[in-house]
Image 1 (cartoon, helix red, strand yellow):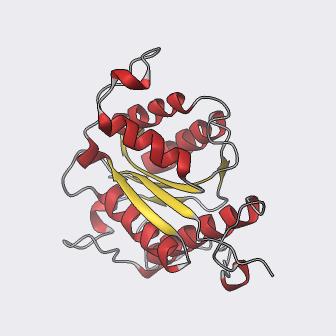
Image 2: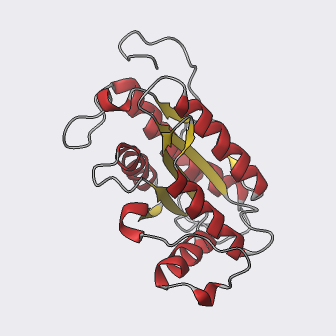
Length: 216
């Protein structure tokens, strides 16, 4: 019986706000991925302070923060993307970071799984931002995890320490973190991979109405 290595899951996201709710959600999902058997790393956009992407500029034209993103994404088995939603779609800082993935070159994210998380101040923008991230992931040839976590009215979804208040939202973030680990292992059986897939039991949730969460 082959013993598999632990998959690597990279979280990319948050906004430039120091207490970014999309970053809090990303950290929660990354913790779940780690518990499910993955090695994880966080690329917080607030800390990276990436420059604007310049089409046709080579990787050598940028500082080490850009190289860190490209190298981390290239080595990842799965990714978690999390963005805030501004003016009806994903935050510009997120789109700019994803534009840098052009520097990966073809086949870009082929063979990698992407899990998507979005937060918004209102009811609609989180869904629009999630749709935009799906299109971006597909354009980069990634496989999108079939559970997408959107958190509308995000100001009411976390406490002052960044913890998710509502249990259903916390469960969805947990399920997404577990799911990307399981899917990464399933998609790359040729690697000397590592967590035991039999131990990763992911429940694909039904999206029934939960009256305990506001506008979920």
